[in-house]
Length: 517
Image 1 (cartoon, rainbow, N blue to C red):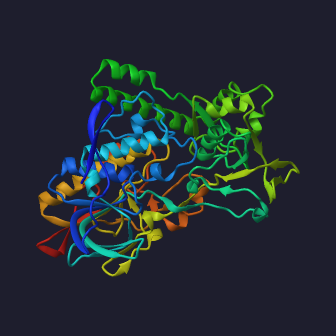
Image 2: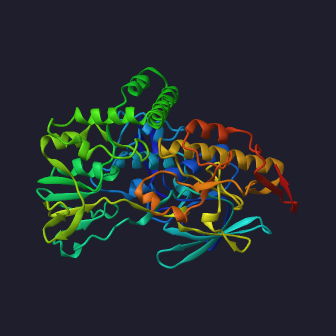
Image 3: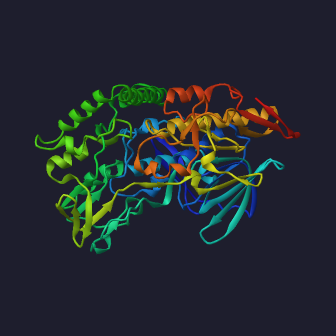
């Protein structure tokens, strides 16, 4: 395999070049199979390699490149709205000058981490996991994966770790608009951004008000004749500094690991403080957000119409704009905001319910994403299909009744990798415990079938609400809630593995005798 050496963040790393690792044999076995080579999957592989070097593992990635959403999304201005000091890996501190970084920088960071730890040599591209069947007799998962050319392989593994997130990668949410076939120009969803699109001097309408829309609008406004953000209802938008001055000072004064630890803890505290304040004093936070926006826009701008939602702050995720770039574009007149509903598309624009007409050469439908539970993998346990809506999540890491299976989904109110990192550490401890005790099967069992349940993803974004019926649920008892409190997650996932008695273990020498811990 050819390799290139480069310097990343002051450290030499090896970046593995094509050809990628060879495809797996028709039948292979690993101790742990990881689904997905995004930020979570690569993080899981790195930690597994550090904590349990004796374990064999492989990563199956459906696409032809690593990075997950950071490789998929290529629309103008794509960036992280979480600081990379907390979005990045704890074991590989981010020491770049900017805290809020563009998508390509995040992608480079992920891939350079994979190369530095040798994880990239364990990734097998172009294999989509279609189904996974657990056999208690064999104590193994049999995983079926298919390639785009129709080839199929079966891999067995002791543990299955799903790091595919919950977004659907092959398409975004694309609602049907009246008369859209009449529009003469391109209609583009950000998830399917065409390479080399020339929009210089063009009139652009971006439909949407979420994180993708507030990113695309100022980015395209730099070259377009004018960009209009058309929203049915507003979202909360807050300006955040691109650089973290405290972090940069600490990086100059302290060793990288100590500076990173302090910065991560500071930023975690800030994220939690803002969220908790929004939950306890929503009107106070709402007034602050309105005031903050009004300070960055012209006096005659209708802040209450365009940036004051009727829901509470953090009932949905806040949209962050680095250094107020959206507000600066609005103030310069490069872009505008219209809050209205679409009546129909026309040949050269959009007709609104109010009677207003928006002229457009290009329409961007930043209308959200579609969700897909566990990458669409069909799970079967001892011949019985797993009905996901009937399963409960245990500690936000496992599913009731599904042995030797774990997954990684982050919290929506902090950087997602903070929760994911806790889950990965928990799974590594669990695997170590199982090995020490001679078990080969671990299952989370709901001890109270009468406990109340609610959706697993319990926040009000439209793209979430459309798909909740396809996902597992969370309970109301201790260990069975999908907590959005990172401090609680830290306690839950760091406590004694057998606390609560929900995990049932089985020894390889006596599979018929289950031991409840």
